[in-house]
Figure 1: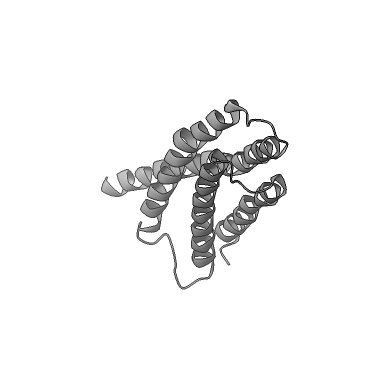
Figure 2: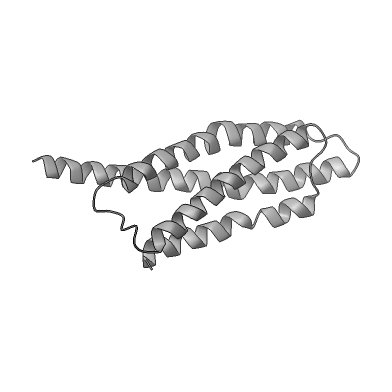
Length: 149
């Protein structure tokens, strides 16, 4: 009876983890694109549109922040479930490194949002390049989890 409950709880946590990862990744893909438009508008000599600032704030505050926390909490719950992760293999380490990298990238985005708000942001080109970073982390994470190398 207890093992059935634990098995069901594990599946619910796993489902919640996948949903929160999708939400977090959506923000990690979209926010740098907003920064491109924000930076290029500011570099063109015009006032940055208030709508970019509002969208950036809401995306970070109401979607990406909660989704990243939920991803971490559910992920840690899965990691600490006995018998799920074999740390003698390479895949948990590559996944962990990529998740840490995504978290650092998320914080980099928060720093750059504050810079954009002060008119000190990077170029649109920089944010176009940054827009590709989450894809690299996603590839490492998905291959690690699916192939379990």
